[in-house]
Length: 114
Image 1: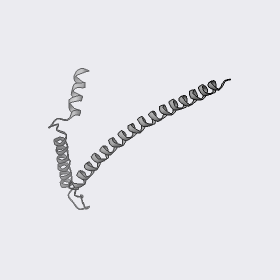
Image 2 (image 1 turned 90 degrees about the vertical axis):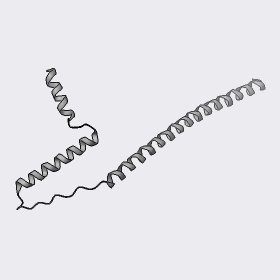
Image 3 (image 1 turned 60 degrees about the horizontal axis):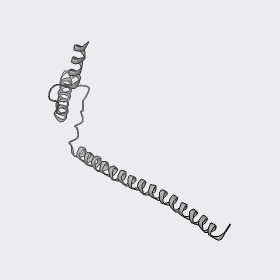
Image 4 (image 1 turned 120 degrees about the vertical axis):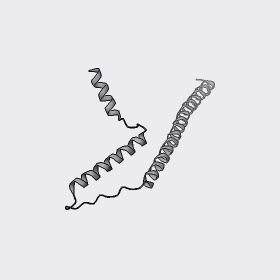
């Protein structure tokens, strides 16, 4: 082989290695950018969750129900029913459903289709 064949061979090897390294570097760059985008999205979700936790901690905690063996069972049952009704109304207001629940309308719809 002549000397120019050796130069040509080494030139092809060096250019090939540069192309391979360039492709690997470009793939790594793209994966890094995608990773940074995911980190940004995760930080936004963490901020939203932190805000929700602080909002939930600011709400007034429920008062514990203390009963004794000598309390009137009818009055206790009435108080429990009232508390449950208040919580149900509050949940419906918060969900924006009004007075009808989704379960009732779907069961009626299921009955009419059968």
